[in-house]
Length: 531
Image (cartoon, rainbow, N blue to C red; front, side, top):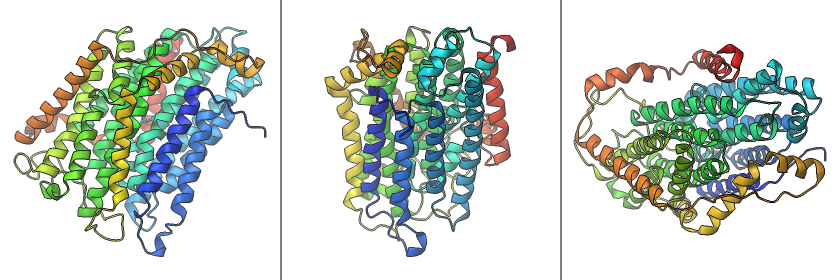
């Protein structure tokens, strides 16, 4: 049909993840939108399916231009889903910021594709890579890499391209947030890895040290800033959105090490994180529909009557921290071990970021579901994160929690747990990572029709070091949460972080300026002549 699709194990696995999360979202939404006809709720399942089509196509495409087309298809559906409540101003504002920033990123990517097509006359990943390898790298190829990667990093919400993500999550319907943080952002990381390994990893592209340096710098910045901002949030959806930013940084670091073990560990980390993060958003949606707010302070002690939701929320926080034997914990252990071979301090970063993001979730859970500690007072622990204008996403406040709203997060957490205890999962992911990094095998399969056998590889598996680091990050998360609910944040600390918080201004012009700055930073990190 003129569309090149390549079903390698990693791409097919991501497409399967997309489809499974879509099923979970549709089940979760079965009785979710009990709204009057003016809400046009009948379009919601259709938009979700279009969104799924775009994400699956992006995961499976073998053509750079078709990747852009699927990139835009998923973006258009996501903009519409974010601003689904069109009669309210805040969803429209969040969707507008989302749409403008991501569209600019897509156009930057298109410009890079144009440069590659002008240079090679090809659009297929394998064809472009083989044609580039006949010559050495030059300025045009490096510029194309910067432009294509910039658009993918915008979709991945890497710092400083991330500003659209918290604003969109704060106003998007909860089922949409489950897909945005559960898999769409991760597809941006996948796109960076896919384009590099198939197009730019040969002698005619970007050298391995330059690529590793660029992604390590961006990954570390993303992980640290995301963790700091996550800890500072009271709005649960924003808190979870910034935790996604932080984990995106860890995913980028796993890709940056350029080994099959780094790719397979990161892939398993993505799978486990998807289940945990979607479950946490599902729990936040229950709170919104029961109490018409997702403010951690306003909800203090009010959700004692929802012990089942509290248990799910706590389990999700522990899974986010990397507690064994969750799949997120096994993926984190494998990725941090691979990263440790590149820089010995990177495993400590994995532990710190996982502990802070998991601790922020556990802190909110202790306050909301158990009423632990002193009631937070306005002005003592940061400025207000909500406006009091939140409304239930159902027809009215829920007096009884429907079964799907509890069954879906429970199933997602169970699936994330199963990923860490079923050995066959690690073997499959290890083989997928080995094939993904076999650039020659990919090209021979696509262009010559020769099926590639997986090179020798070490699948993700539990080791003592990974178990101990996972237990350490979970213990730190519990400790941070306990200290936070018993001791108010000092005014000096809040003032120190105020400039960082103000960067999330909500102004589209500021976000566009940061996109330009991020493109310049990526250029400095990857183009030797600029440094």
